[in-house]
Length: 585
Image 1 (cartoon, rainbow, N blue to C red):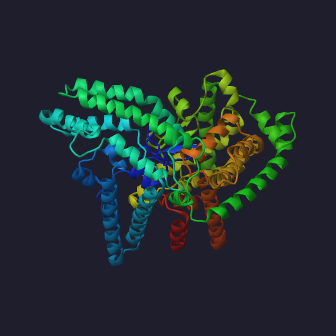
Image 2: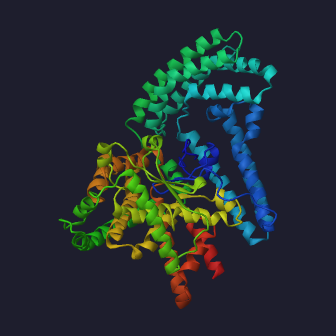
Image 3: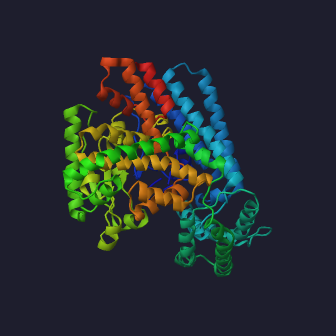
């Protein structure tokens, strides 16, 4: 998931990140990994890593299915709605999985066997994902945009002498002017209608639909502009028919899909379970929900006990934890002062890390900047941009709006948020992996939110004892958020609670602004279902692993060595991480 294309993962894991061409993983409030985590493997890498990466290339090519695209002559922008392409890709991945299984049966090297298991599992989940997509997902696409992109890619990929003829051929094909063929829009409407007859379906994101429909007319005009600019001969008749078809498709989408998406955000249970699995959650979600409810109540009690101390130290006229949160958030900073505060906080935290020997710091500089106006408009939450090693802070410059979104521009919150996005959280983890010669199986293919978000949330707990009183208090508020995510999303997806219930928990019990709470609910219901529980679940798994290691090693336990070891293993899921740690002790 690049910034522009959050799959999500911005729906989820490496399967969808390769499947839909988006290199991204959802973290913090959001962590964007735009580039591969590790540099290309050099000749100095261990032999098993070199061999492992060859197997990773095999699976990557199978999932990308470029051979299918070439053989069938389908444009990349339209391949997801092409049944022949989907069937070809499924067969490509199946063959890759079979090859991986054969190699695994022969391999003796334990490290490479582990990587082969990771790659095989990713391939098998891809096949399950394809099957569930066919079973549940409505085959919707922003058709006018996809057709325009198809024309542009044809121009790019075809020799200049024949590009006009190739584009005209596609135009006639899409408009249904080829003998025995029906228009693409009509064919797609038929497939969508057939899927909607099923008792349970997964609908497109409501916000995405609204944006697509709003842009349809301008995109249709862009098609004509493109055809004229390329001097496509005799295009007007076909374009006129295509234009009518695309406007009819818009009416169809509004009537048949948008009206349903407005009322139903829930994923079918099978799909939601797969989303959770792709995010690295290996425990039944019902057990995670139970643990999260208990943790939420426990953190509330801690905050209630700490609240009077914070109020006294800060001179606040408040007693209960909800009142202290509101009072601390009254100290709001300007955009410039917010940036300066977080930069100072990052230096303070690095000093603590070094003095307390908590984890090895990377050599490169950690960067922080304010979000752009466009970033604030599209998804105004804190995020870490891994490719630029930069923590991005959302600050609304409209003063009236900023008063309503006061969660991250107060000094007390700056401690734990900088830990999560910076060091020892996301920035340190990604920096540490860049220094490792790890296989792509353990970075790109193993990548999951449980590991990444779990580490950053665990890091908050590591640093909490060294924060000032108000920093500890607001760090607990973030713990409320992590626990809330782990029960609110599953309960929304199961229909146990309503969006109003979730908003009430986030604003009244967890103390966040209505503006931020609304962004959270969109995360659970539309943007990234399956990802929210990973923060709580991942951090709990790391805490358990650390506790078990401390008991086993006793006085020999070293917190920096433990943390460095965890960071050296790539983005492994909890069970694999535990397996490797046990074998190294």
